Amino acid sequence: MKNLITILIILISVSCNSLKEKVDLIVKNATIYTVDAGFSKATAMVVNNGEIVAVGDKTLLSEYEAKKELNLKGKYVYPGLIDAHCHFYGYSMNLRQIDLRGTQSFDAILEKLQLWNETHRATWILGRGWDQNDWPVKKFPTNEVLNKLFPEKPVFLRRVDGHAAIVNDKALAIAGIDANTKVDGGEIITENGKPTGILIDNALELVRQHIDAPQLSEKVKYINQGAQNCYAAGLTTVSDAGLFYDDINLIDSMQRANELKMQVYAMLSPTEKNFKQFMEHGVYRTKRMHVHSVKLYADGALGSRGACMIEPYSDDPDNYGLIITNPEKMEHIARRAFNHDYQVNTHAIGDSANRLVLDLYGKILSENNDRRWRIEHAQVVNPEDIHMFGKYDIIPAVNTTHATSDMYWAGERLGKERLKHAYAYKDLLQQNGWLCNGSDFPVEHIDPLYGFYAAVARQDFEGFPADGFQMENSLNRVEALKAMTIWAAKSIFEEDRKGSLEPGKQADFVVLDEDIMNIDFERIPKVKNLATFIQGENVFNADKVN
Image (cartoon, rainbow, N blue to C red; front, top):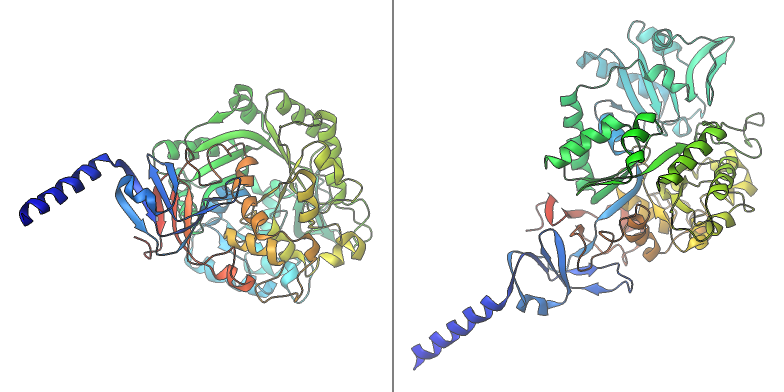
């Protein structure tokens, strides 16, 4: 009798298992933030063929049989994080340069350059990341010492924002730059009738065009390295703010060969080749590449005083900043994009530049449109202009870490009254009920949780200022998470496929070791990413998830 009962139990068990639907992966015993319309939570998720099949509780375990089960033991799952504005390709290529981020003086930079030059045989010395606002003397350096140290080797060092650089005389000579050189939308700083080596905005291109591009094998190597860094940070999609045809083509070819898993929303740099190859043929979309927009520049950056202001800088009363692109050219490109149903994403930081772009968009867009044209950064907006975001459905594509990076000196640049209307993320959010948030890496750190922290805490990692920086414009945690998931997906026309964990969407998700929705503010920057999945594939694992 006992044998008969055992056989029956086995038969029933086999029968039940045969009725279960076979899938690739079951995530169980998790705390899952779905970021769906109800912002619901779940404990289990089912994945098959790269898509989410079901989200719910432990009852799913009786309905599905998986090749692999992921027991998270209460760990926290969020939709794959989307960087709505970054420079993925540029960041990857920067990995071959000297990292100058965090240097506390120009002397510290010089020391780094000498050490690097001793072990490298490059024809140029290239670096990025310096910020004179971090130095004891907060002003641009001059190139006299660079000239003494490197008289025969050209040096090109970009500021952290990418809108200024210091070069030595060798680089100036190669580019044919002297005190009489002029460039539209840029500036060559001079003292006593001689260039100091500081170049602003469009002037950088005079030198940059002479720097040898990396070889194809180098590009592939550094793109893959950049992607690995993104996976480790929990990023599953990056919106690259300005790419040329050859760069898009290379990334696309690596994706198609299944060598690159990173998903890329590519904003076109405004070249005729890009327009002919992409825009005039409509939207280009593959499994991992999406081309649907053009990137324009209205002005420069606040840190290098290139942001274009209605009134002059408070700490430089003769300086209003720069308009980088001729407004007529911007309008021509914007109308061309409109006619081909392409999104326009324009960099605007100063209040004058934001007014220019808002007026330009308003001339072309109708009210109640779904074109999703964006203003990148939207950093300083005059209160008389902010309503235009809502009137013409213009999306603020903000960078919350810019607020906490700039807060130490932004008041000096802008003055007390104008500062009140800078980094006004809550005010911008209220215009349309949503916005997107990106890091702008490599200008800022690649970790998206730093942006989440900056959005909600408005403090640096030491908790300064104690009450937060202009907290009336902080975002709450739900808003901050949406800005880097579902709203970020919406900003690139991909909310149908990603941004939330719902059946039918891609299985893009991350596993974090702590709950960013509930832990104390100061814990957020210390949260670790344990695993990253893109379209159901585990692209990063911190060896704590199996």
